[in-house]
Length: 498
Length: 106
Image 1 (cartoon, each protein chain N blue to C red):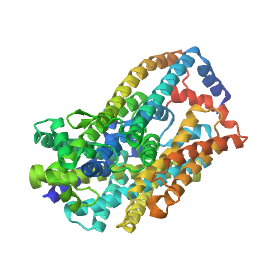
Image 2 (image 1 turned 60 degrees about the vertical axis):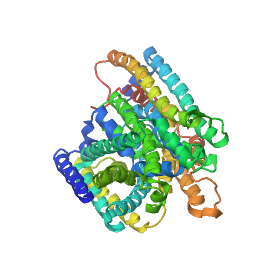
Image 3 (image 1 turned 180 degrees about the vertical axis):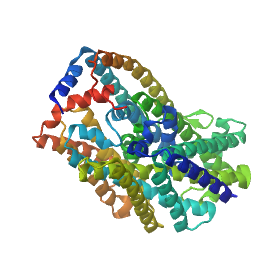
Image 4 (image 1 turned 60 degrees about the horizontal axis):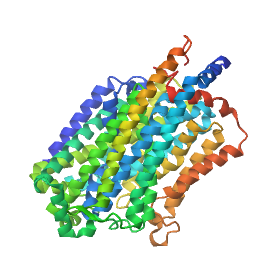
């Protein structure tokens, strides 16, 4: 049964890809769907790009097993969009064509800045993708009984097909369909759960308290060290606004106004989703029971599917499994296209070819790049079998927060900021995040040198300090002259190519 | 980049409308960011270091749950306030664009 639903999703997404491939001929079509996506469509696509299987299955699971701490974890994922909305989205839309480096290149020496920005983008996307793929392999094995290797290859091949043939247009519609399916599935599940408690949330909380104790509704079951949680919060808040696969979505809309609208749509959907995960988590804890959940999967990933089975039988389980499958596909496709964009547009066209590559050469390289990124990720995911890679998501956010956000903010607000500052800032943020994670409990376990699971609390300040020192130690002031231009463009949209 | 071009950007940047626009935009960005960052970090700090909000309020629903839930509404409300503010600024931007010389900057 689940197999049938999976096949329907594969068929529909491949039809979309075929349709999109006929409308994808220029680089602008390929990277950003010809800037033709409307605000609300883009908003739904951002939600689809952002809400991963980790959100859907993982957060429902930690709420079912750890109560309040799971809910607290989900808050930062929404609040982070305020940084995107108020500081980053519109200036970026006003000054860029396809990538973050476009904005930096206004003021800075192109080659070094583009090369480092491409490196940071590809690093973030790859870490994020490995975490998604490894998680997906495990989840599909639980849901469909397919082998880990086979699951990863199927997902990997599909994501490559969407991106290579359908470009951003296909990726966008896969993300929109996924977001609609995910919201529908979550809403139906929540409705069914609440119907068991006479639609009284208070009644549901009372039963949770009765069965698992009132402390289950209080902090402290999951996070023993509050600093861990604060550091994670900083990574989410500062990192979301630096995630390449989210940033690229702002170039798919025609104006800054539509970019603004799309963030608000995304916030409504994402917020509603995270609030509903409480019903999923508590529903699973009460109607399935923690024993049965941990028996199926220790980390609690099976809470939502088991809840679906308990409430709606095999058909509903199959539907929810298919939703989880679509969820994974949409996120990894978004990651592939942002990494391919950074590789082909920033690294190949602007660094290697000095901006002299033709349209058809660029598209070709973007397509090869997508295949390359896809295959490397598949291989890495196969090698990481049975590894706990959940920390890679935290690492991706930490790199985005420490390497990308400082340079975005300084480019927009600091006149003196220059090439040397941008390069040192990005490298400091990137390296310090990676090194701090290597010496953290994620990797070194009990013998960790750095005590926090997420490095953001230290690596974000380091990223800012790197950018400041790099700027002040260099005598280069050429970027001051072009500041006025960027400043006016970013804040008004004047001079934007249509 | 042609010198004439860069003069035009400077001209816009020093116009009174643009200066007014940036003053309003930066003021909003500054105060709203301070507000939501403090509101957000109050949650892990209160939850991690104190038991202040563990009092039950509706049945078993306690204060810390309601505070966590309030974060969602805080984010939505602030987003709507920002959109209203930005829509007003859009009018100033339209005005600046109208005052531009005929040959558009690119």
